[in-house]
Amino acid sequence: MEVTVKWVDGRTFLGESGSGHTVVMDGPPDHGGRNIGIRPMEMILLGVGGCSSFDVMDILQKGRNDVIACIAEITAERVDTVPSVFSKIHLHFKVTGRNMKDSVVARAVKLSAEKYCSASIMLGKSVDITHDFEVINID
Image (cartoon, rainbow, N blue to C red; front, side, top):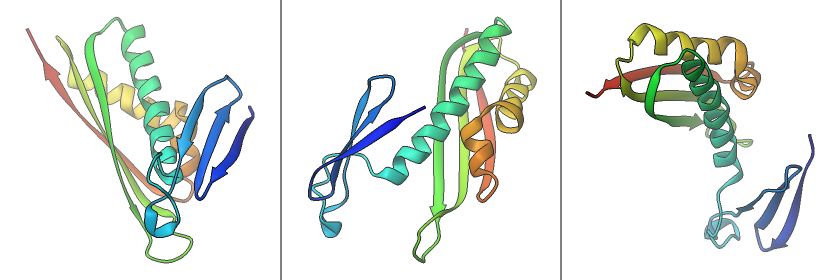
């Protein structure tokens, strides 16, 4: 896997993935940025959320569950010193579907957290990562 990050100007960078996708990253004005892109540390949280969401949905769909929506809300805390690393990350999954069972969603979240999600397992070696979920059944 390879990516490149190209400086544009100020604190603006263009990230290009090996699969051909791009993203703009920037900093806040008080750090020389123009606030026109996502912060690099936000990218890390998006990566964790995307990785874990991918797993959860893969597990639920392979189990032939009638999932209508899956939203991962990720919150994090950072230390007050430099480097301002994450100290805590929490993933909260909201899974909406028909006839969804709490036990099935719990299993999918647990498997992602403990076995499949490379991003959260890697970060979990130095960050306290927690997960929970809620099931919303519709008729």
